[in-house]
Image 1 (tube, rainbow, N blue to C red):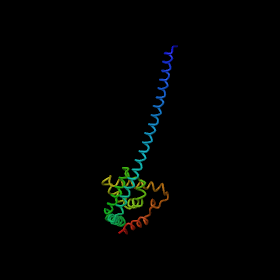
Image 2 (tube, helix red, strand yellow):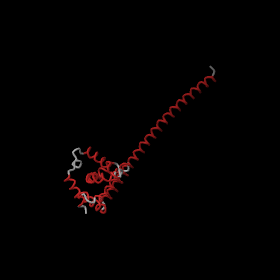
Image 3 (spheres, helix red, strand yellow):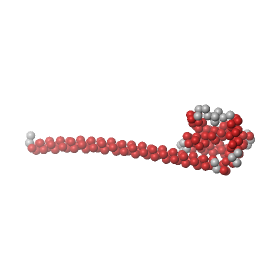
Image 4 (cartoon, one colour):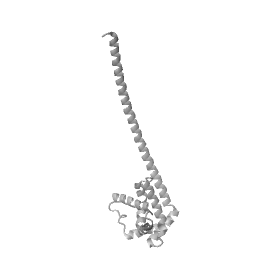
Length: 188
């Protein structure tokens, strides 16, 4: 073998090793780039989840502020009186509409059902139980009326069942229902 052949063979081996090293570097680079993209996607997903939670909490606080506004407390008081006396039950429809809106936000994912449960379970349960006959009568004429309220009631009741299997609210007696309606009447 001549010196020229040896040089050529040596250069070929160097190029082969350089190519292998470049290939390994490219593979490692691709691996690290993939890991970085995966980490970034995971971080982005976490940021989205955090944002949705913050938005849900903000939405709940706005609903809570509206629900406890003195003007709405008067509406709730009239609604409770109508449901307790079973007269002029149309007075309760603004409260049913309110919870239908809350239910819509839950159904669309703008408000987490567990947050809706934590903030409103007591009143959702109270007004659904007190108004279910009126609601049922109206749904015979218009099947879709207060469907999101109905869905919300079932969702928060399920959470209550999981958290408190012996919940007094889920086994509400007529006396307890009347007492809670009276509390609402006494708001004003």
